Picture 1 (spheres, rainbow, N blue to C red):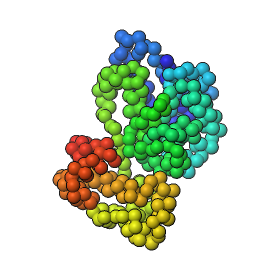
Picture 2: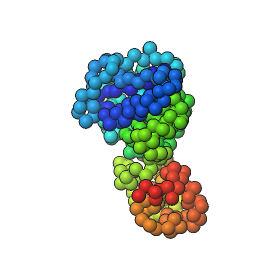
Picture 3: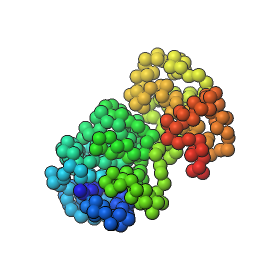
Picture 4: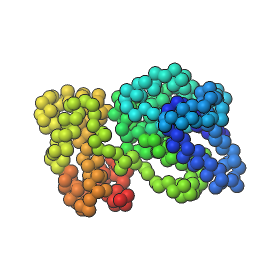
Length: 324
């Protein structure tokens, strides 16, 4: 069993480093088990040469990536790459080495190799077709672009790590640490992963939501921006599809089509997303009661509000307040 940390030009050095630390800690903390000793971890590039990290530093590697030599149960692990916009993703996926890697990932996945990626590198898994019909996550600020490009993927945009039938995805850059811990649990054991998390002081983070910056969620589509502004101004109002369409001076069908194309969701789900992100922000930054916050975002029933908040953020109000 082997873990191949595949690096390309633009790899996030910090994400790669923390993953290497996780697996090294797992090896040392579980050194008495044969299974732990059997997990080898090495850094590879497409041609065996050093690459340039996203911060400009030179990243040395242990050898070349040889996908044909991988066996069922081996792991290909890819940290995020320096592509933070939809335009940058387009350029990334057009690079010759990336096109070649995408093809190799597709072949490896079909042979039972575990393929895992975080942040913008999840787009490589999507391009390889490995996520079609599967559940996945990606970095929160590229979630809309991901949903548009890969409509056959069931995107869980708020979750930190998602595993589905041998393909594992994680969110924003340092969610790579969560991904490495998840792989440790899978390959060595949950107790070892727990010990590694405590040893490296890595907290349990099931959701990306508390790290989201509301203003960064703004779509480039003017209709979506206008709708988000309308929702923000009417958080406690009843907002039916018909009412939203009237406010945008368009038909319900046209509005639904525009929101689906630009944000990968429905108008009503967008309403819930904006409400829950605003509620999470208030819970984290104020001492307002849960009941008061619930009313401010249109919920008379605090229990229903708590359920919706957990569905969107993965956290209860108490857990959100604990991060302060």
